[in-house]
Image (cartoon, rainbow, N blue to C red; front, side):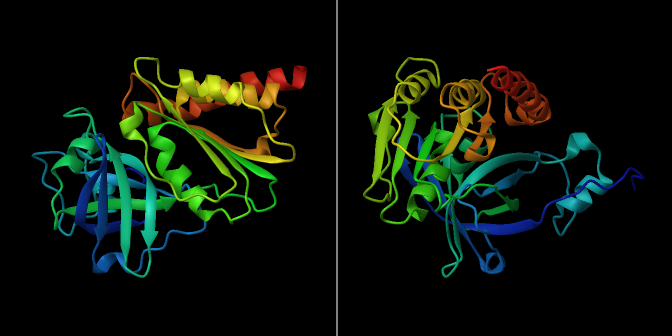
Length: 283
C-alpha cells in the first residue's frame, strides 16, 4: 500500500448506458441511467460537468471499482484516464443523464467510446461540478462557444424565462452540425460554419462585430482556449465588462489532449488574467 497522501476525490457515480443516438453526423448523444443514479443531483448550474472515467486496458482494478482506492493504492501511471463533459440534460424523475460526445472517427478517447457504447454498458464518472447559471437580474445574456460549449449553452437557454433576451453565437463545422435548441422568444441564435477556417476565427469575428443591446449583460464564453483568450480580451478591454459579468474559460486547447490541457490550464489562465487585467487597469 502506498504511503503517499490520498488525493481529494470527487463523488464517484456508476451508471449504465440506456440508449444512444446520432444528433448530427459528428455528435453522439448517450443517455445514462440505472438505479444508482436515483440519488444523483445536478445542482443549480447550467454548465454542470462530470468527469468520465476510462480504465486503462490490461490493468486490473479493485472490485468493487473505486477511484479513491485506485488513487490511494495504485501507481499514477495505472490510474484511469478522465475526460470532462458538460451535462446536456438531467431528468431527475426518470433518472436519466444525457451527455453529448463529438466524434471524429478513432480520434480521441471518449468519442470512440460513445460510438461503440451499447445499452447495458457501465460507465463510472465523478461529479458534478459547475459554476454558471443565467442571472435573472441581467438585462440580457451573451453566450458564445464551439461544439464543446454547446451542451452548456443549450441547457442555459432552456433555463431562461420566456421574456429573457439573449444573443447566442455557436461555431460548428458545417450546417449539418446545427442542433435544435429550446430557447425563449427573445433569443437570437447565430450559427457559424467553420469550414476550413481555424477554430474560433469566425466566432471571434461575429462577437467582436456584433451590436450589443443596451443594459447589463451576463456573458458565457467557453470553448477552445485560444479564441476564448481573444474574446476575453475583447469583452474586458473593448466592451468594458467586469469580471463578475463573465463566465469565461477554455474547455480545451488545440494541439493537446485533456491530460495535457488540465496539467497546464491553471498556469495558462493565470498568465492570461495577469496580462489582460494589467491592460484593463492601464486603460
